[in-house]
Picture 1 (cartoon, rainbow, N blue to C red):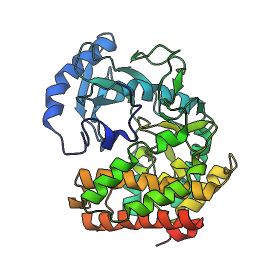
Picture 2 (picture 1 turned 90 degrees about the vertical axis):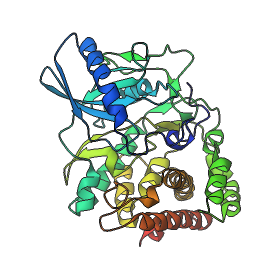
Picture 3 (picture 1 turned 60 degrees about the horizontal axis):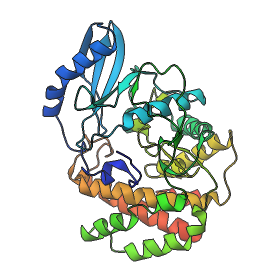
Picture 4 (picture 1 turned 60 degrees about the vertical axis):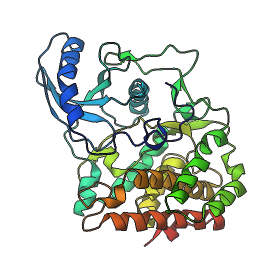
Length: 372
């Protein structure tokens, strides 16, 4: 299926919020079929599977294939989506741009033999950076700088069109892959204008948040976005990770080992990924990320207002997911909630970030208003 009419998969997919709840039964039902599929793919080599440490909307396993450590992701949503093939292509292109990503050892998104799509990646022997951040041991200034550098590097990848990436009409779909001997070509965004993508589901998202009693100022938000419509007039889109956060970066306290989970990647605005960092971090973190970015490329025109506009849009989406999936009812064992905090604290933080983004957009504020 095409993701043309999707702004963000987790909340806009036909099976909204699929994979955001605790899962277990599906793992046992799929594991046997997955093991046989991997044996076939790897020419009969021995395959051992054990539960993987994934907190996203995929089922995950650790795999040992003839003694080699690998990581397996499975998409088993009812939509029969084939997007793991696109993400495999993006991982290759990002790595070719000089940003470390896991090597892709294989994938099959055709669902021709089994009812799910799967992907096999290099297993990186490091936790995600949120692990260290919650412990208070992450070397934040240097890590934030390197994240900014990486964003600037992958923005060298550009596309025709805007929105969630898909295969162009001129490129045959590559749904089943080996170890991807060369970077895939033919990816594009399905929308002619960036504003068309930016406004996808916006009214629906705001209506949901108003109906659930989370937001009361939706008219003000829409009016402010409309006041800055000209900022959405982009001549070309660049690669945007679209889920950039510490739990999608692996490494040690002071070194990045790999960027992961590009399955929400889009062709979009250069300030989008930097705004995503502001969904979780303060002015000091963002200032270092901006400095890292500027060590590779210059900031774009009107970068601050574009930053606030995208922070506002991203926080609206995150609020939809957090309300719809019940994240405000969880404790600090959940990856989004800081140690010693609660779901209520996450709710308050979400509201505060939306208010800050709206204020920054109106005033063209500096990053300092992100400070606690």
